[in-house]
Amino acid sequence: MKKKIIVYQSSHHQNTEKLVLQLARALECDTCPIAQTDRLNLSEYAEVVFAGGVYYGKPAKSLTQYIEANAGNLKDKKIHLILTSGIGFKSYILNFKKMVEGLGLKVDRTFHCKGFNTYGIFKYIGGIAKGHPSDDDIISAIMWFRD
Ligand SMILES: Cc1cc2nc3c(=O)[nH]c(=O)nc-3n(C[C@H](O)[C@H](O)[C@H](O)COP(=O)(O)O)c2cc1C
Image 1 (cartoon, rainbow, N blue to C red):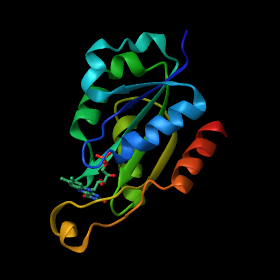
Image 2 (image 1 turned 180 degrees about the vertical axis):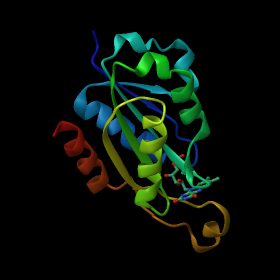
Image 3 (image 1 turned 45 degrees about the vertical axis):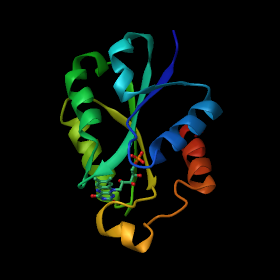
Image 4 (image 1 turned 90 degrees about the horizontal axis):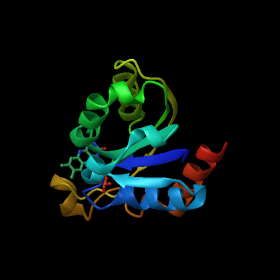
């Protein structure tokens, strides 16, 4: 049985995807973009990482909807959460964790870091969180997972 997979959503600048693909390479685990989850068989995995960007203060809807729809199949699994966001508020990941736990699921680890953001007014100043996820962010994520 394959152990781990990262299911991810990434649409703005592929910030989350950049982090996820390097993390997956380092840890030798599978990845699945949220748009391809119709072909995903969760029963093959013991651990699932959900990763995505923050939009209007919340994790990507497609990601939370997938978790809600598959809560029954996730009950016996180790779940980890990753978010990237322009501002990097800790409350984003804490609220995400609460939401997932509210479905009766157990969240093991959480990781969050900044991601380049040019949405709205930020485009006029060249964006915020430029260069993120940075190499340091990616190393932190790998250490976080390996720990
Ligand atoms: C429509 C939209 C809304 C966003 N809302 C927020 C927000 O409320 N808070 C924040 O910190 N970042 C916000 N961001 C920035 C993204 O969370 C950030 O760029 C993230 O890394 C995007 O991940 P992605 O490139 O993998 O899609 C927003 C970006 C977009 C495009």
